[in-house]
Length: 372
Ligand code: ATP
Ligand code: MG
Image 1: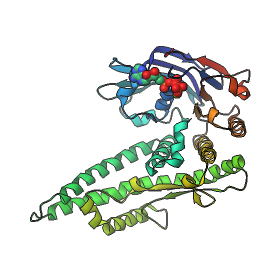
Image 2: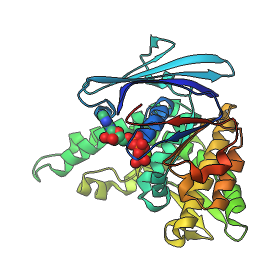
Image 3: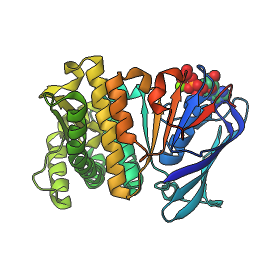
Image 4: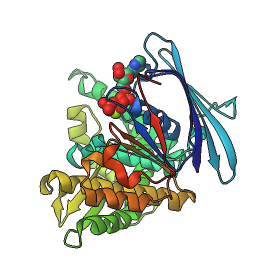
């Protein structure tokens, strides 16, 4: 796939800027706080409808403006598509394909695919389990857009069930709770049905990603370090069969009934799952030096690229925000070798001197200054 052009209007610090991409590699150069990351963020939004920097649309719209727009033309094997996203300070965002508004945002996903790699990604190793779940969910949305809907349904059930559990917890002692427990049983079934869909998909994608990441990791770090990635669901199952997983889910919910009622919150389900990252059987969080943790993240990102390409049949974009400078020359070379000319890549940097390896004669340079 190829991102041909981008048009930003009142997006972050951009007033009205057209960008045409005319090379496989685009180097976005500028001083701090000029709009380099904002440009990459716009592409990330078109690919995932999410930004890794904010979950609030009002942050994305230019100061003092009511709405902002991102528009792009993407070339795929099957043809060209114009994508547009309108973000509002107040009210819902709207999306369109080829100038036709979409009722379901889900239909917007899967046209543009991108893997984002920024210095914040070290949180994948160091951060709380939630960071890894979010990462995995975003990958899944790109591999299988319908997953966005599945996850949304699960979160909805989770919220409602939590509200009910809180109500039960806060019930006065003399008040009968039978009626609420009947209601809870209905939510249990919903949680098991939706939760098992989420958990099974996540476990399956890790199963596919793990060997690819391990192989990249071995290549970059040398053979003495073995990377092992495992999805750790808090509901265990023997066979990857929908009915069996749901059954296991329901049993676990029954077991946790008392603590859930005491805590007033759901403790069983994929919102409590973990992705274990181990190097030589030790959690990477406590094992690695900063450089080793970076190597691990690099291996995960390269694995993501490869997996998306395998699944959708076209190479996704790669967005590298400030990461090259943080890698040593060996790792920089590994990364560049892996990308070669296979993936359209947007790279940000504050100064061009250190990236000689990138100066192939056909890369494009964009100079960014105060949103222009
Ligand atoms: P660095 O090299 O430090 O990473 P950068 O070029 O990547 O810098 P960006 O994060 O792209 O910088 O842009 C930051 C600039 O955008 C800041 O000046 C910030 O004030 C401005 N900015 C962010 N959001 C908005 C907004 N909603 N409206 C106007 N300006 C904004
Ligand atoms: Mg930046």
